[in-house]
Length: 265
Image (cartoon, rainbow, N blue to C red):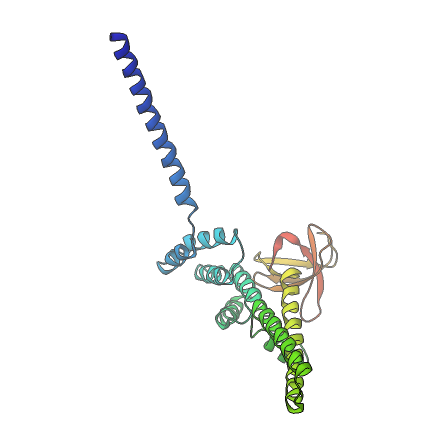
């Protein structure tokens, strides 16, 4: 009887210790889950409370999961608040790349650029090229793609009506509609592909160091050509050397600088 009683107590103790172990495991899992719950709302709350460093950390962690124009925009705002102009410009540029139609992004980007030392000279482009770029930036890549697909479907419908209709006036009307829709579809498709190429082939970068010397050759012994400062946007014209990048400015100046001095948009 005593042996059975002792066995019962041992079993009970084992069960209790097992329950404690399960509770500890559940607590550990729960803590990890809470740690991983990083949302844009959390970053926005930190930003609204003036905790810009916390907001930056939250937004940066969110962007590790995938790009978002709104997160890049808010991250740019947070960096601007802590007077980190280079990172502010970088993230505004990335937001603009994903959503060129956002007027707030464009305004804040120009505001941040005004705080940088080097001023970007306006590109000397023909007026209709400038007009087309402004027109293309009115909508995002996804919106242009939807317009291209929708107009193509409507084009097929108009052609079907044109082919099967017996009335001359109806055939004429839908033939005109078909031509217009074909032009819209081609224009929207061309614009969407252009924005997609800019997203895929990112050849623009921002200078991230306070200042950097641009040299004639990819070497520290190269002739000093000019100096660029943080926040300056450049075009990468040669990306074949790992530690050095050949860059080009709007005025045609070309030179080499160390890759560590810039970050791709």
